[in-house]
Amino acid sequence: MTELAEATSAVTFDSPQLQELIDHIADGAIERDERDELPYAAIAAVKAARLGALRLPVERGGGGATLTQLYEVFIELGAADSNVAHILRSHFGIVEDLLRSTRPEDGRWLERIAEGDLFGGASTEIDAPAGSTDYPYRTAITQTPSGLRLNGTKHYSTGNLYVDWLIVGATNVDGGKVQVIIPADRLGVLRPNDWDGFGQRFTGSGTTSFDNVEIHPEDYFSKETSRREKLPYPATFFHLQLNAMIAGVLRRVALDAVELVRARRRAFYHAPSDVPAEDPILQYSVGLLASQAFAAEALVLTTAAALEQAYAAHGTPEEQQLSLRAALLNAKAKVVIDELANRASSELFDVGGGSLTRRGAHLDRHWRNIRSIAAHNPKTLKAVAVGRYELNGTPLPNQGFF
Image 1 (cartoon, helix red, strand yellow):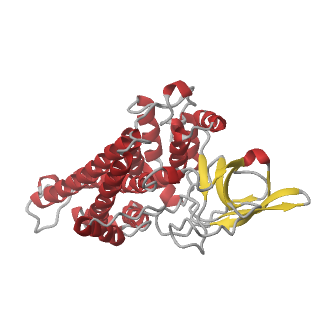
Image 2 (cartoon, rainbow, N blue to C red; image 1 turned 60 degrees about the vertical axis):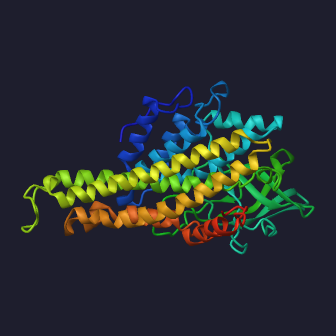
Image 3 (cartoon, helix red, strand yellow; image 1 turned 90 degrees about the vertical axis):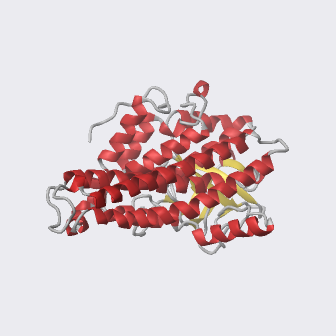
């Protein structure tokens, strides 16, 4: 892979610099999968290009992208290397929170983002019900003779191997929930590479532990419940990211199908054509995959436009209904995208023979990654929630994992 020059400002949407970065990430994806190599170099390129500032206004040193454009980039990153897209998931959610913040002191974090720093989150604990907002954190800040100290373990802390700062949800000394922002390399912060999933293997989605980590008064970020509770259906942003990543992988599946058929020089003796690219059965397979990729991307971008409209209405009487609409569209999109993508990543093998199952082809990575991303929130529960709403007007769940 070629090295990328460090940017003097954040990359902008649809710019040659952004395309160069995405191509750079894609160029090494198969080799990383082959070598079980963590994408530190790819993330270094992301930081150098200041991709993490894509959503910041230009006047604040950012790329000035709209919300819909951000999701277009997520699709492109998913097609290049879904691990890299997933690593950035928490960061862009934190950026959205900061952009909505009215606290002047939060401006310092936007400055760090404009300079290329990446942020990660440490919230989930293994004993808590998924999506619960009432469960007390076991990770806690205590007063010791040496000062405030943080201890505990977080799970599913995607991306934390690669980031510069961590936002940690914890129980404070007074028993309330708080968030602190600390340097990811502060003494006592442990980020082992212990994620053992069969897909999205390089996302660092394992544990983040805190062993007597110093906490200073300036590390306090907010009361843990003070931010997203102000936003109806706050999880739509994050789950639409997952849909966008799957749509990106599906785009790569369709592109791989084209390349595989074009490269084939021999056909089955009973095939309709001696030239694979002229075989109507293979043409159908490629056309179907390309159409499914298009449909998935269209669903993501339609939902992104709805979410952008809801965000623009923040604080108005229309916000609740627009946010509900975006959450509903996202749920419907997931049910369809998961079905399309899981099937397509298997049907890819129909465009070739047994040679496509060679480990060196790494085509199994598409199914493994899609299956792992889709498992974040079962489509069955999404479909049930949609059905209840359509039949009875039952409100959609409005917590962190819907």
